[in-house]
Amino acid sequence: MILNNTTFAVVKTLYAKPMFWTGNITVWLGNISKRSNSQVFELISALISVPFFKANNFLFKRLYALQQRRLSLVGSKCALLGGQNLALQFDGFALKNGSVANIYYYLAQFAGRLQRS
Figure 1 (cartoon, rainbow, N blue to C red):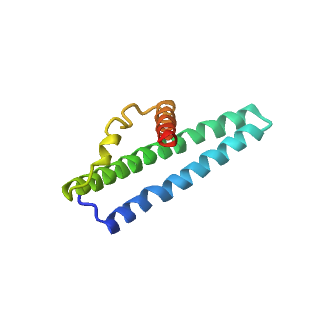
Figure 2: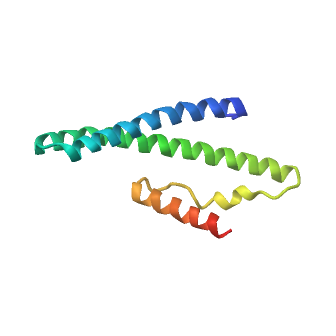
Figure 3: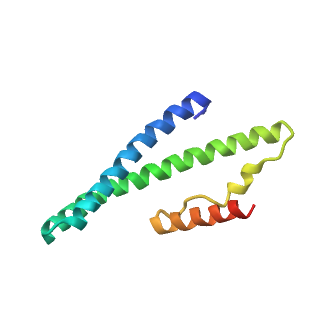
């Protein structure tokens, strides 16, 4: 898929808007679960929030992969123009394991590397 600036912006928006809403719904259902007086309502709202959380996580992974691909293409263009391909720094940073804890760990490591540099 060829990603020019317009296509990239449209695809990014198509992933980002549903990700925003599924995230808000997940938080809203989590708050209902915490505030409910009945354990039955707590369980129901917690169970309903799981598909929204999984959808949010799926959209995050797709948007992340899209942005990583975009950075790789920009790095390749820079290398073709005689510059340095800084996108090679991102090669080891793929979200191979889909667990939320691993994604958080990788993002925290990356943020630490950015702060040190």
